[in-house]
Amino acid sequence: MRLALGLLALLGASSLGPTPGAPPARVKINDNRAPGGTLRNGVHTIRLEVREGEWHPDRDTDPGLVLRAFAETGKPPSIPGPLIRVPEGTEIHATLRNTLADSAVFLYGFSTRGLADSGVAPIRLQPGETREVRFAAGPAGTYFYWGATRPGPITGRPASDAELAGAFVIDPAGARGAPRDRVLVLAEWARNPRPGGVLLRDDVARFTINGKTWPNTERLSYAVGDTLRFRIINVSETPHPMHLHGFYYRVESRGDGSRDTRYDPAAPPQLVVTERLAPGRSYSMSWAPERAGYWLFHCHNNFHVLRGRPLDGSPLLPEYRLHAQNHALELMGGLVMGIEVRPDAVASGPEPPARRRLRLIAQVDSAGGGSEAEPTYRYVLEEGARNSAAAPALPGPVILLQRGEPVSITVVNRLPEPTAVHWHGIELDSYMDGVAGYSGHPGRLAPVIAPRDSFEARFTPPRSGSFIYHPHADEVRQQQAGLSGALLVVDDPAAFDPSHDLVLLLSTPRRDAEGSNKILLNGSMTPAPLELRVGEHYRIRLVNIHTNRPSMIVRLLRDSTPVRWRAVAKDGMELPAERATMGPALQQMGNGETYDFEFTPREPGEYRVTVTGVGGVLVAMPVRVR
Image 1 (cartoon, rainbow, N blue to C red):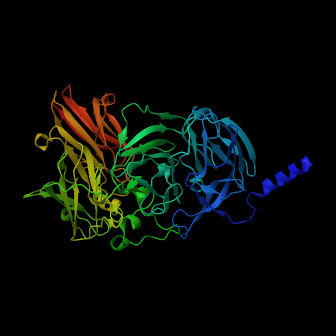
Image 2 (cartoon, rainbow, N blue to C red):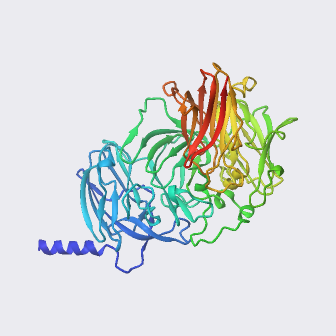
Image 3 (cartoon, rainbow, N blue to C red):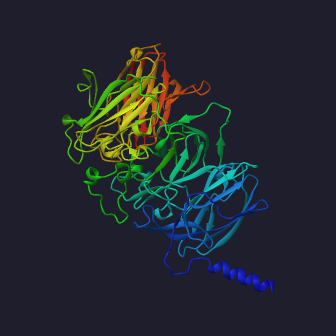
């Protein structure tokens, strides 16, 4: 009798797999809220298969494609793969099966976390092979598992393997109640992947959060005062500088898939508005919004938030930019999450009796020789009778504001197309945030600024620091046309000295081949030298608003050796004393990040600022110290 039951069980288990010759099952989108498998008596049992499935990353009714995904036995494949979530001390019992008919698979991450993965070989499964593995979960943290049809790193996988990954979260022992965090897996699929994950605007590609592209990603909703906790995992080809609108967030841990380093909660927090996340890495974050409204959390590599070409390869018509009814929903795509923060009470503070008033005019730069396909635009800043029209067009004029002083900036659109301006890193009301068609409140959304129209942004900057302003409508096109600039908030504008407070802004050249090695430093590929003096103190503000280079490294060199500078701020937030330290003058930067350093030259001579990336030195600025 027992033998018969065992045979029935085996037959039943095998019948739950895919039927040979049957069309692939439709992929289920996994929001990572419910873990897969079962946990009993300290053992977590899960049965996983590598399957082919039909995936729809856009709307469910839009075209899909067939690729490989993980599935629990007897259930449809899911993207991301089933969540493995267990307490510390759990033993994992996983049954792994390769249902592919013609490809071996190599599986990673099915081993004890907290150990160096370099010595852990992947699990190789031949077509049709099944294997059982047992291992201890390891220490608490944010991890992941993944697979590919070739051995090697997580980058460089075939396109059909690009979403073959899942989250693996280990909670602290003794944690009570259901987890209150959200797990977000970032992935990337490209029809014709290029070395290094480089993408061009016309490529057919999808960047996904938990298996979907904006505006089809899950919409999150919280109340003012809630503590929001996210775990972010990057299983894609490229780095993603993840930017939160309107707020700073606290980075609580960083991990590399094998180890997860959690920071002391009693230590001064690591607060950012943008955090660069490399492939195969993770971090956890928290924030407690004190202002209601609609907010975005998105990758600041602008190519990763473009509306993608249809999966059938047909082109996007160029006129869609001019006739979009909602720019946030129709022009954006990819790695974007929408977050609603509900008010605890409907109230607004009184309007300040007086505001400083500026006008920021977006206009065609006729001297730039642009065309309709590749326009050249510029910003002009006006205050009273003063304006920046005589200044160079690139980069945009520095907007200098005073901490705590109410300001009104009227954005005037003299372009032949709609625009909008985002005040990157500024803490302000959602309606003023600059995401046309999304920012605001129920029943009151910020409009796109039509040609010959304007929009007044009002805010009171609460802290001094280095910030950015840039379009949030057709971002790649308009930023590459020349629209971006630095926004500095200081305690006393009268004491601001631009000869000792130095802005170094990285941006994209006009009419440059997308994906090329060229960048602009302060609007030029051959920037003018900096003139410094021995013994004098300088503040160097690094601002990266490039559209497509999230890994550039800035160095201040004498000969070939970095000098030393002191870190003082990140994303406009002053660093606590224990982190405001001296170190070598080099900094890797993601798009949308700002870093401030103090530098005092000790010896005269020839120095230089270099910006390096794939391809070597991308741009260099001479520095003469006298």
